[in-house]
Structures are given as C-alpha cells and as structure tokens.
Image (tube, rainbow, N blue to C red; front, side):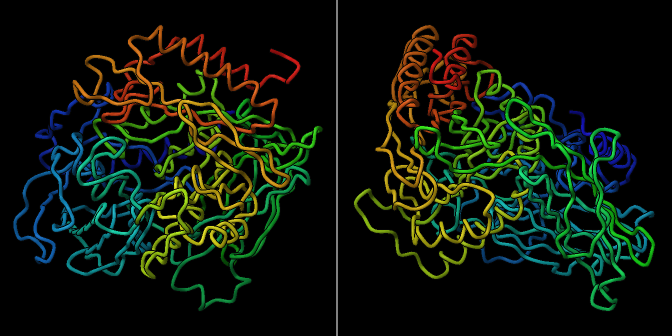
Amino acid sequence: MRHSIINKSIIFTLTILSLTPGQIPAGAADYQPVPGKIMTRWAQEVTPDNVWPEYPRPMMVRKEWLNLNGLWDYAIQPKDQDQPQKFDGKILVPFPVESALSGVKKAVGPDNRLWYQRTFDIPHQWTGKRVLIHFGAVDWDATVWVNGSQVGSHRGGYDPFSFDITDALKKSGPQKIVISVWDPTDKGYQPRGKQVLDPEGIWYTSVTGIWQTVWLEPVPEVSIKNIDITTDIDSGLVTLTAHGQGHNIQKSTPHNYRIIAVASQGQDKVSSVEGALDAPMQLKIENPNLWSPNSPFLYDLKITLNHNGYDIDTVVSYFGMRKIELKKDQAGVNRLFLNNQALFQYGPLDQGWWPDGLYLAPTDEALRYDIEVLKKLGCNMLRKHVKVEPQRFYYWCDKLGLLIWQDMPNGDKHIGPKNPDLVRSPDSVKQYKLELKRMIDAFGNHPCIVMWVPFNEGWGQFDTAAIVSWLKKHDPTRLVNNTSGWIDRGVGDVNDIHKYPGPGMAELEPHRAVVLGEFGGLGLPVKDHTWQDEKNWGYRSFKNSEELTTAYVNLINKLRPLIKKGLAAAVYTQTTDVEIEVNGLMTYDRALIKMDIDQVRAANEKLYLPETEK
C-alpha cells in the first residue's frame, strides 16, 4: 500500500530542506572518502550535499525540519583537554570517524575525545518556535554546546535523543554547535555490540561518535513529544497515547489541550478519535487488514494537537494491525503464532555492518537493498544481532514485510555455559537497563519487531529472570527470548540453541517454543570482494557458488523434518560477509549474492508449507 500521508509529507520536507540556508557547509567540493579495503556501489553516490537526506523519523513526521548532515570540523585530542581552538580537518557527518565514508578513517580510542563543530542558520519562518536538535545515535558519551552554552549530554550508543536549544540561540546570524564524544569501546562496560579496539575473528572495527542523522526541528511552545501505539486485531482496536512536551503545559488546564487522531487507508478515512494529551485513546478499525510478511499492510495515521480550538502541532505516522504470541498448535506443540496462525519464522542473523560506512549504510537505498534481497531469497524474518539500526531500517521492514527479532546490544564480560549469571557493577547494571528501556520505547511502535532478545551467548548476562519479567511487563505485546544460545535460564517464551553448521533443536517443552537461534555459517571467500585477501573465516568453507548452493540446500532440507518435530523458528548465519567473516548470503560489499537465488528461494519456501506438503 502507498502511504499517502507519509510520502507526501516527506517529499514536502525535502523541498523545504533544499531551500533552507545553511544546509551545505563550505568546502563540500573538497570531500573525498578515504580509500577503503572494499566499497559498496552506493559509496560513489555519497556527497556532502546529499548525505542521508531522507526524513530520519518515519513514524513521527513533521513538515518542517533542517538536516545538519554534511561536512563538520573535527578534532581528536586527549580526553581531558578542553575544547580545541584548532580542528584537524573535515568529517562527513553522520558516518563514524573510523569509516572510509567519513573522509577521516582514524581510530579514537578510550584515551581520546572526538570533537565536532559547525555553524548553521535558523530559517526566519521558525521565529517564535521552540527549536529542537535531534541525534539519531551517537556512540557513546556525548555533550552538546550551542553558542558556548551546554544544552545537554547523553550516554548511550544506539538510542535517539533530543535537546531544546531555543534559549541558547542568538537572535540572528550563524549559530555554532560543538559536540564532544568519548567512547571506551571494549574497555568499558556499556552496551557496544561487536565493535572492539583490535578487531579479529568475529569482532569488528570500533565505531565512535555521530553515526546517524543530526537534524533540527521547530515546534510550538507545547508539542507532541512522542506517541505510543499498540494494536489488538481480535477487537479491532488501536490504543494510542500522544505524550506532550513544553514549558506551558503546567500553566494551562489539561482540558485546553486535545488530541485528534485520524486513521486512513489511502485517501479514505477509516477511523477517528479525540482525547486528552498524555492519556490513552482508542481507534476502532472495522474488519482490519492485517500486517504480515506476505501482506505488509500499513494504515496511515495523522495526529493533531489542538489548544483552545486551534491546531498547534501535527505529526503523521502509521501502524500495522498484527499480533504475535506463543500458542500450542493442534498437536499440542508450542509454536510462534502470527495473527492467530502458526508461522515458521526463518531468516538470517543480520549484523548490519558496511565496509565503507561501518555502522551506517552509505545510503537509504543501500539499507533497503538488504531487506529486498532477503525477501527475494524467501526469508520472512531476520535477527538483528547486538545492534540497533536507524529508524528508517525498521520503516523498510514494516513497509516491505520482514519480521525482526531485536537483540539488545551486549557489553561487559562474558560467562561460560556452566557459569552462574554475571554480577555486574551498579553502574553497568544501571546503564544496561537504561539503554534497554530506551530501545524498546524508541522502536516499540514498529509492527515488524516481534521478539526482544536481551542476551546473546552469555555476553553480559545477569539477573536473567528479572530482566525477562521486566520486559514482559513493559511490553506485553511481544515475545521475549531470554538468551540466544548457550545459557538458557528456563524463562521467557522460547528456548534458543545455537548449532553450527547444524541444524538442531532442543527437547520440546510444555510452556515454551524451541527455536534455533543460529546455525549454518557456510563460508565462501570471493576474490576482489573480501575485507582482506587471505585468512578469511567461516564455520565451513567451500570453493565456489555451486558447492555453496548445494551445501545450503542440503542444510535447509535437514531443517524441514525438525519443523514437523516442533521447531518453531531458525536463524541462518548470516546476511552478508563482515570484515574477515565470509559466511554471508552476500559479499560484504553487497556486489554478489553468493548462491543461486532460485534454488535458495525454493528451498527456503518449503519451510513454510503445511506438514502434509513437501
């Protein structure tokens, strides 16, 4: 379905943006990416005047905004030094400083601090509005100054955050923003995923600093801060809460602020409701079109904040009517049910790394391409592995139809299969819980996400039962996988084992489904498409595409009988090669799909057939 409201709004905002002064910094013509070991085909499209121009928050779109992506000044200096008086050169935001596309490709390390600086102009039509600065993600500890005034700080490498910078702005002329970032990478306890200071094997290049879009947005004195959306397909209800922000909320009686929500399908209004700010309200959807991988139907949603009869703020969004649950099939076996029907979930472990942008895809088209390939190969799911993506990734999964098991980025120490849960420091526990909650709150509206995975293979695993219990209470609409691989604590909705090359499954249980959280890892290095020329690594190695395809099809054929025995889902390692790992369905540069597409798709699609069919 075409999202008429969202698409028109994004087109309009891009038009406004292209006419807004201050978007493209001086010296843009001098930018060159640092030659990388390998690059994707999209890298050549990246320039300072078109770097990630798309609206970064598709689930809450406003008409006016200003993109601050582009060339900034940067400096790397010892951690405890003051703000630099002189900068080292130019960096292309939002690519991490270690990446080729940043134009820098330098390591920072825990003993140094990364500094950013640039100026921008506030459009005259924003006069009288509050101005917010938004960061998609900054890894890890960021402090922000505007015109010399500190406007805020934030710790967390994966969640979006914002500051109101209005009071720090000058009345006219260029506004200066300075940002400092410190990141201990694997020398700290914070959630960090697979990045390390000394990459090897399954551990990859470190990522420091800004790695998602930075942007400005004007809002009224009182505005919509965020929205919570949950759907109930059985009753045809959408529960919606619009949360407010602003200095004047407390000065006015609550009934002076009203929320009007309108759901539509194309040009046709489907449902509407009016209610209070910060209070739940319900939209009734008659005979709802359900969202699924085979039919990713999305409704448009327009939310307006009204004050004393005047519309003061409007955002547009969308939602999908879908239900995920653990339920027994007719044979009494626990399965994963989507929209009241058992569905075997199958797809790859997805690291989300890029040879030229590291944590960030070079373009939105590149980000979408991975999802399109997985759909073409017959996958209906992916497991997003110890990383959180930009919001546009989840938008494309919503729009194209791909289920997601979302890992929490892990950090701190590891425990072995026979060890008790880790005892983390109070600071480590606090940071993990804070970032876990932020991840769920920031991305919980997306229908594509059907499972949260707090731990992976004993990495940072602590208080497992308590974490699972909290997750189930905080988000009762999704499944929880207590840990993927190795150290199951008997809680949550699934027992998840890893077996290479596999496949395999655990014994059936009375209260949980059994899933295969990782298997496969069939490797093939492809000359001229690898991170390094020699000593590449895979769980099993093959000589050519034909051998690899045959081995893959044989592996999937062994998976099919396990489904009849009760296996509810499986995750193949992995979407792409990553640095020296060569066990991807695609090469790291996405130039080649390494197996025969038709044979792979045919094998994968058999996994979804009824048990009576072959």
